[in-house]
Length: 100
Image 1 (cartoon, one colour):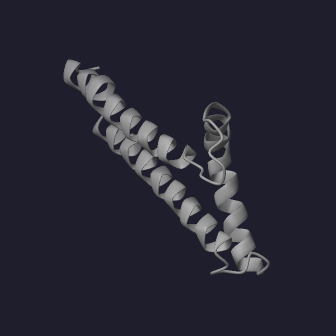
Image 2 (tube, rainbow, N blue to C red; image 1 turned 90 degrees about the vertical axis):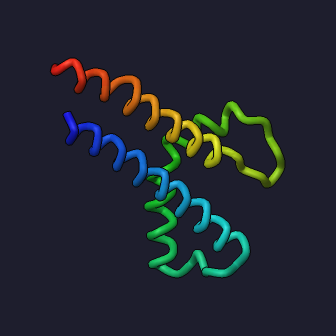
Image 3 (cartoon, one colour; image 1 turned 30 degrees about the vertical axis):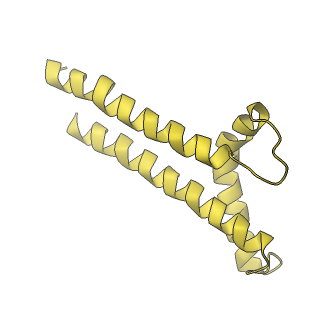
């Protein structure tokens, strides 16, 4: 059961860093720090977008339009943090303690 707790914790941690990388990448492209037409930059951007859009897209539908400000990554990171704590403390540890 310890391996399952470790796996869940690390998957959520990794996805949180992918969300942060997507935010940083979008800022770098928006402020013309990197050229989005470069093949490597475009590939990294598309990969990050494909990994994060299934989570961020539904969140954006529920958030109000704030112009150019996208709060969906913040909501997603907070939700992932809550999910991580909930799963580990309230689901996995009691199951491991009961001996299942």
